[in-house]
Length: 311
Ligand code: A3P
Image 1 (cartoon, rainbow, N blue to C red):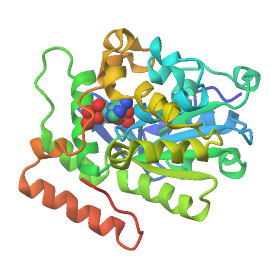
Image 2 (cartoon, protein in one colour):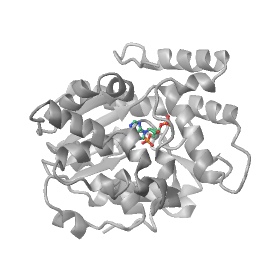
Image 3 (cartoon, rainbow, N blue to C red):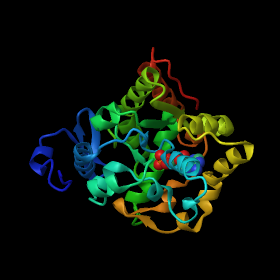
Protein backbone atom coordinates (compact mmCIF):
# COMPACT_ATOMS: atom_id res chain seq x y z
CA UNK A 1 0.00 0.00 0.00
CA UNK A 2 1.27 3.48 -0.81
CA UNK A 3 1.29 5.22 2.55
CA UNK A 4 0.17 8.80 2.87
CA UNK A 5 3.10 9.87 4.99
CA UNK A 6 5.92 9.80 2.48
CA UNK A 7 4.64 10.55 -1.02
CA UNK A 8 5.26 13.04 -2.49
CA UNK A 9 8.39 14.06 -0.65
CA UNK A 10 8.80 17.57 0.72
CA UNK A 11 11.55 18.00 -1.86
CA UNK A 12 9.09 17.38 -4.66
CA UNK A 13 6.45 19.62 -3.07
CA UNK A 14 9.00 22.41 -2.85
CA UNK A 15 9.28 22.40 -6.63
CA UNK A 16 5.55 23.09 -7.09
CA UNK A 17 3.92 26.52 -7.28
CA UNK A 18 2.88 27.37 -3.73
CA UNK A 19 0.79 29.93 -1.90
CA UNK A 20 0.69 30.73 1.82
CA UNK A 21 -2.94 30.04 2.72
CA UNK A 22 -4.31 32.40 5.38
CA UNK A 23 -0.81 33.05 6.70
CA UNK A 24 -1.10 29.56 8.18
CA UNK A 25 0.17 26.85 5.80
CA UNK A 26 1.20 26.36 2.20
CA UNK A 27 -1.11 25.11 -0.47
CA UNK A 28 0.47 23.63 -3.60
CA UNK A 29 -0.67 23.54 -7.19
CA UNK A 30 -0.88 19.91 -8.28
CA UNK A 31 -2.37 18.90 -11.64
CA UNK A 32 -4.07 22.29 -11.93
CA UNK A 33 -5.67 22.44 -8.45
CA UNK A 34 -4.50 23.81 -5.09
CA UNK A 35 -4.21 21.62 -2.00
CA UNK A 36 -2.45 21.45 1.38
CA UNK A 37 0.40 18.92 1.40
CA UNK A 38 -1.54 16.42 3.54
CA UNK A 39 -4.38 16.41 1.03
CA UNK A 40 -2.00 15.69 -1.85
CA UNK A 41 -0.62 12.79 0.11
CA UNK A 42 -4.11 11.55 0.97
CA UNK A 43 -5.22 11.92 -2.64
CA UNK A 44 -2.35 9.83 -3.95
CA UNK A 45 -2.94 7.08 -1.41
CA UNK A 46 -6.69 7.19 -2.15
CA UNK A 47 -5.96 6.90 -5.87
CA UNK A 48 -3.66 3.95 -5.54
CA UNK A 49 -5.71 2.02 -2.99
CA UNK A 50 -9.41 2.60 -3.60
CA UNK A 51 -11.24 -0.11 -5.54
CA UNK A 52 -14.72 1.10 -6.38
CA UNK A 53 -17.67 -1.27 -6.22
CA UNK A 54 -20.51 -0.84 -8.69
CA UNK A 55 -22.93 0.02 -5.87
CA UNK A 56 -20.70 2.57 -4.09
CA UNK A 57 -22.07 6.08 -3.73
CA UNK A 58 -19.47 8.86 -3.82
CA UNK A 59 -20.52 12.35 -2.79
CA UNK A 60 -18.38 15.14 -4.22
CA UNK A 61 -18.13 18.87 -3.63
CA UNK A 62 -15.81 21.80 -3.53
CA UNK A 63 -15.37 23.42 -0.08
CA UNK A 64 -18.31 25.22 1.58
CA UNK A 65 -20.90 24.35 -1.04
CA UNK A 66 -23.25 22.16 1.02
CA UNK A 67 -21.13 19.08 1.75
CA UNK A 68 -22.45 18.68 5.30
CA UNK A 69 -26.03 18.91 4.10
CA UNK A 70 -25.48 16.41 1.27
CA UNK A 71 -23.82 13.95 3.65
CA UNK A 72 -26.74 14.26 6.06
CA UNK A 73 -29.34 13.91 3.29
CA UNK A 74 -27.74 10.77 1.87
CA UNK A 75 -27.24 9.25 5.32
CA UNK A 76 -30.97 9.78 6.00
CA UNK A 77 -32.00 8.33 2.65
CA UNK A 78 -29.66 5.35 2.61
CA UNK A 79 -29.85 4.51 6.29
CA UNK A 80 -33.47 5.33 6.79
CA UNK A 81 -34.08 3.33 9.97
CA UNK A 82 -30.87 4.18 11.80
CA UNK A 83 -30.57 7.83 12.81
CA UNK A 84 -26.77 7.98 13.15
CA UNK A 85 -26.88 11.76 12.82
CA UNK A 86 -28.43 12.13 16.28
CA UNK A 87 -25.13 11.18 17.87
CA UNK A 88 -22.49 11.73 15.17
CA UNK A 89 -21.41 14.73 13.12
CA UNK A 90 -22.27 14.15 9.42
CA UNK A 91 -18.54 14.17 8.59
CA UNK A 92 -18.05 11.11 10.79
CA UNK A 93 -21.08 9.36 9.33
CA UNK A 94 -19.89 9.89 5.75
CA UNK A 95 -16.13 10.13 5.58
CA UNK A 96 -14.05 12.19 3.18
CA UNK A 97 -11.74 9.68 1.57
CA UNK A 98 -8.61 11.75 0.95
CA UNK A 99 -8.66 12.88 4.61
CA UNK A 100 -8.99 9.30 5.80
CA UNK A 101 -6.08 8.23 3.60
CA UNK A 102 -4.05 11.26 4.68
CA UNK A 103 -4.59 10.41 8.35
CA UNK A 104 -4.07 6.70 7.63
CA UNK A 105 -7.31 6.02 9.51
CA UNK A 106 -8.75 3.86 6.75
CA UNK A 107 -6.88 1.06 5.03
CA UNK A 108 -7.74 -1.23 2.12
CA UNK A 109 -8.79 -4.04 4.51
CA UNK A 110 -11.26 -1.77 6.31
CA UNK A 111 -12.63 -0.75 2.95
CA UNK A 112 -12.97 -4.23 1.53
CA UNK A 113 -14.66 -5.43 4.72
CA UNK A 114 -17.38 -2.80 4.61
CA UNK A 115 -20.88 -3.92 3.65
CA UNK A 116 -22.46 -2.56 0.47
CA UNK A 117 -23.62 -0.05 -0.43
CA UNK A 118 -20.70 2.06 0.79
CA UNK A 119 -21.26 5.80 1.09
CA UNK A 120 -18.23 8.11 0.96
CA UNK A 121 -17.32 11.67 0.11
CA UNK A 122 -14.47 13.48 -1.61
CA UNK A 123 -13.59 17.12 -2.25
CA UNK A 124 -11.33 16.09 -5.13
CA UNK A 125 -11.95 17.46 -8.61
CA UNK A 126 -13.21 14.95 -11.17
CA UNK A 127 -9.83 14.73 -12.90
CA UNK A 128 -8.17 13.63 -9.64
CA UNK A 129 -10.59 10.79 -8.82
CA UNK A 130 -9.31 7.20 -8.81
CA UNK A 131 -9.80 5.56 -12.21
CA UNK A 132 -11.89 2.83 -10.63
CA UNK A 133 -14.48 5.42 -9.54
CA UNK A 134 -14.60 6.95 -13.01
CA UNK A 135 -14.77 3.60 -14.79
CA UNK A 136 -17.08 1.60 -12.54
CA UNK A 137 -20.85 1.88 -12.42
CA UNK A 138 -20.75 3.50 -8.98
CA UNK A 139 -22.76 6.68 -8.57
CA UNK A 140 -21.50 10.18 -7.88
CA UNK A 141 -23.58 12.99 -6.40
CA UNK A 142 -22.06 16.45 -6.75
CA UNK A 143 -23.27 19.55 -4.93
CA UNK A 144 -22.37 23.14 -5.70
CA UNK A 145 -23.41 26.59 -4.56
CA UNK A 146 -23.31 30.10 -5.93
CA UNK A 147 -19.73 31.39 -5.81
CA UNK A 148 -20.49 34.52 -3.76
CA UNK A 149 -22.04 32.60 -0.85
CA UNK A 150 -19.35 29.92 -1.17
CA UNK A 151 -16.62 32.53 -0.79
CA UNK A 152 -18.30 34.21 2.21
CA UNK A 153 -18.93 30.84 3.88
CA UNK A 154 -15.25 29.91 3.40
CA UNK A 155 -14.08 33.18 4.92
CA UNK A 156 -16.12 32.54 8.08
CA UNK A 157 -15.06 28.91 8.24
CA UNK A 158 -11.32 29.56 8.00
CA UNK A 159 -11.59 32.45 10.44
CA UNK A 160 -13.13 30.02 12.88
CA UNK A 161 -10.58 27.25 12.47
CA UNK A 162 -7.37 29.16 11.69
CA UNK A 163 -7.73 32.42 13.69
CA UNK A 164 -8.53 30.97 17.07
CA UNK A 165 -6.38 32.92 19.49
CA UNK A 166 -8.24 36.23 19.44
CA UNK A 167 -6.50 37.04 16.18
CA UNK A 168 -8.14 39.61 13.93
CA UNK A 169 -10.21 38.14 11.10
CA UNK A 170 -8.28 37.51 7.89
CA UNK A 171 -8.81 40.47 5.52
CA UNK A 172 -11.99 39.79 3.58
CA UNK A 173 -10.68 41.44 0.45
CA UNK A 174 -7.58 39.22 0.38
CA UNK A 175 -9.72 36.10 0.53
CA UNK A 176 -12.03 37.49 -2.14
CA UNK A 177 -9.03 38.08 -4.42
CA UNK A 178 -7.67 34.58 -3.79
CA UNK A 179 -11.07 33.07 -4.54
CA UNK A 180 -11.44 35.06 -7.76
CA UNK A 181 -7.93 34.01 -8.82
CA UNK A 182 -8.75 30.36 -8.06
CA UNK A 183 -5.93 30.14 -5.50
CA UNK A 184 -7.69 28.43 -2.60
CA UNK A 185 -7.96 24.91 -1.24
CA UNK A 186 -9.36 22.60 -3.97
CA UNK A 187 -9.61 25.63 -6.28
CA UNK A 188 -10.11 26.96 -8.86
CA UNK A 189 -13.78 26.76 -7.88
CA UNK A 190 -15.06 27.13 -11.45
CA UNK A 191 -12.81 24.38 -12.86
CA UNK A 192 -14.04 22.07 -10.11
CA UNK A 193 -17.71 22.77 -10.80
CA UNK A 194 -17.52 22.81 -14.59
CA UNK A 195 -15.89 19.42 -15.00
CA UNK A 196 -18.44 17.67 -12.77
CA UNK A 197 -21.17 19.59 -14.65
CA UNK A 198 -19.97 18.44 -18.07
CA UNK A 199 -19.50 14.85 -16.86
CA UNK A 200 -23.04 14.89 -15.41
CA UNK A 201 -24.39 15.93 -18.81
CA UNK A 202 -22.48 13.12 -20.53
CA UNK A 203 -23.44 10.43 -18.00
CA UNK A 204 -26.58 11.54 -16.16
CA UNK A 205 -27.19 8.05 -14.78
CA UNK A 206 -23.77 8.11 -13.12
CA UNK A 207 -23.48 11.69 -11.89
CA UNK A 208 -26.26 13.69 -10.27
CA UNK A 209 -25.57 17.43 -10.13
CA UNK A 210 -27.26 19.32 -7.29
CA UNK A 211 -27.32 22.99 -6.38
CA UNK A 212 -27.57 24.26 -2.80
CA UNK A 213 -30.04 26.96 -3.84
CA UNK A 214 -32.38 24.46 -5.53
CA UNK A 215 -32.36 22.30 -2.42
CA UNK A 216 -33.34 25.36 -0.39
CA UNK A 217 -36.05 26.42 -2.83
CA UNK A 218 -37.58 23.01 -3.48
CA UNK A 219 -36.43 20.56 -0.82
CA UNK A 220 -39.18 18.03 -1.53
CA UNK A 221 -38.56 17.91 -5.27
CA UNK A 222 -34.79 17.71 -4.87
CA UNK A 223 -34.91 15.08 -2.12
CA UNK A 224 -37.17 12.88 -4.25
CA UNK A 225 -34.79 13.36 -7.19
CA UNK A 226 -31.80 12.42 -5.04
CA UNK A 227 -33.51 9.38 -3.51
CA UNK A 228 -34.58 8.07 -6.92
CA UNK A 229 -31.07 8.57 -8.30
CA UNK A 230 -29.69 6.56 -5.37
CA UNK A 231 -32.15 3.78 -6.16
CA UNK A 232 -33.92 4.35 -2.84
CA UNK A 233 -37.17 6.06 -3.81
CA UNK A 234 -39.05 7.31 -0.76
CA UNK A 235 -42.43 5.72 -0.15
CA UNK A 236 -44.53 8.81 0.50
CA UNK A 237 -44.62 12.40 1.64
CA UNK A 238 -44.04 11.39 5.28
CA UNK A 239 -40.73 9.77 4.37
CA UNK A 240 -39.72 12.78 2.31
CA UNK A 241 -40.53 15.09 5.24
CA UNK A 242 -38.59 12.86 7.62
CA UNK A 243 -35.47 13.05 5.44
CA UNK A 244 -35.80 16.83 5.10
CA UNK A 245 -36.15 17.31 8.85
CA UNK A 246 -33.51 14.70 9.74
CA UNK A 247 -30.89 16.49 7.65
CA UNK A 248 -32.05 20.05 8.29
CA UNK A 249 -29.76 22.86 9.39
CA UNK A 250 -32.12 23.71 12.28
CA UNK A 251 -32.02 20.19 13.66
CA UNK A 252 -28.33 19.44 13.14
CA UNK A 253 -27.02 22.77 14.40
CA UNK A 254 -28.82 22.31 17.71
CA UNK A 255 -27.78 18.74 18.41
CA UNK A 256 -25.42 18.42 21.36
CA UNK A 257 -22.92 16.49 19.22
CA UNK A 258 -22.62 19.37 16.76
CA UNK A 259 -22.40 22.08 19.41
CA UNK A 260 -19.38 20.43 21.01
CA UNK A 261 -16.47 18.30 19.98
CA UNK A 262 -13.98 18.38 17.15
CA UNK A 263 -13.32 16.34 14.06
CA UNK A 264 -10.08 14.38 14.20
CA UNK A 265 -8.74 15.70 10.87
CA UNK A 266 -7.42 19.21 11.52
CA UNK A 267 -9.15 19.54 14.91
CA UNK A 268 -12.08 21.33 13.35
CA UNK A 269 -14.88 22.14 15.81
CA UNK A 270 -18.11 20.40 14.77
CA UNK A 271 -19.97 23.70 15.15
CA UNK A 272 -17.87 25.25 12.35
CA UNK A 273 -20.01 23.43 9.79
CA UNK A 274 -23.25 25.08 10.90
CA UNK A 275 -23.16 28.85 10.61
CA UNK A 276 -26.18 30.45 8.91
CA UNK A 277 -27.37 28.09 6.20
CA UNK A 278 -28.99 30.74 3.99
CA UNK A 279 -28.86 31.83 0.37
CA UNK A 280 -27.71 35.39 -0.30
CA UNK A 281 -25.56 36.16 2.75
CA UNK A 282 -22.95 37.61 0.38
CA UNK A 283 -25.09 40.79 0.40
CA UNK A 284 -23.88 41.47 3.94
CA UNK A 285 -20.21 41.37 2.94
CA UNK A 286 -19.66 42.28 -0.72
CA UNK A 287 -19.27 45.81 -2.01
CA UNK A 288 -21.08 46.52 -5.28
CA UNK A 289 -17.71 46.30 -7.07
CA UNK A 290 -16.96 42.92 -5.53
CA UNK A 291 -20.30 41.51 -6.61
CA UNK A 292 -19.88 42.90 -10.08
CA UNK A 293 -16.34 41.50 -10.32
CA UNK A 294 -17.26 37.96 -9.25
CA UNK A 295 -20.42 38.00 -11.39
CA UNK A 296 -18.31 38.94 -14.39
CA UNK A 297 -15.85 36.11 -13.73
CA UNK A 298 -18.79 33.73 -13.27
CA UNK A 299 -20.35 34.84 -16.56
CA UNK A 300 -17.08 34.36 -18.45
CA UNK A 301 -16.29 30.98 -16.91
CA UNK A 302 -19.78 29.54 -17.38
CA UNK A 303 -20.36 30.92 -20.85
CA UNK A 304 -21.63 28.23 -23.21
CA UNK A 305 -21.73 25.57 -20.46
CA UNK A 306 -25.49 25.71 -19.86
CA UNK A 307 -24.80 26.04 -16.13
CA UNK A 308 -26.00 28.98 -14.07
CA UNK A 309 -26.19 29.96 -10.43
CA UNK A 310 -28.93 31.59 -8.38
CA UNK A 311 -27.74 34.09 -5.82
P1 A3P B 1 -22.89 29.20 5.64
O1 A3P B 1 -21.49 29.45 6.07
O2 A3P B 1 -23.31 30.09 4.51
O3 A3P B 1 -23.87 29.20 6.75
P2 A3P B 1 -19.87 22.65 3.73
O4 A3P B 1 -20.77 21.69 4.39
O5 A3P B 1 -19.61 22.31 2.28
O6 A3P B 1 -18.65 22.90 4.51
O7 A3P B 1 -20.67 24.02 3.62
C1 A3P B 1 -21.00 24.70 4.81
C2 A3P B 1 -22.18 25.58 4.54
O8 A3P B 1 -23.38 24.79 4.52
C3 A3P B 1 -22.36 26.59 5.66
O9 A3P B 1 -22.96 27.73 5.03
C4 A3P B 1 -23.33 25.86 6.58
O10 A3P B 1 -24.01 26.71 7.48
C5 A3P B 1 -24.25 25.22 5.56
N1 A3P B 1 -24.95 24.03 6.09
C6 A3P B 1 -24.47 23.07 6.92
N2 A3P B 1 -25.40 22.15 7.16
C7 A3P B 1 -26.51 22.52 6.48
C8 A3P B 1 -27.83 21.97 6.35
N3 A3P B 1 -28.16 20.86 6.98
N4 A3P B 1 -28.71 22.64 5.59
C9 A3P B 1 -28.37 23.77 4.94
N5 A3P B 1 -27.14 24.35 5.02
C10 A3P B 1 -26.23 23.73 5.79
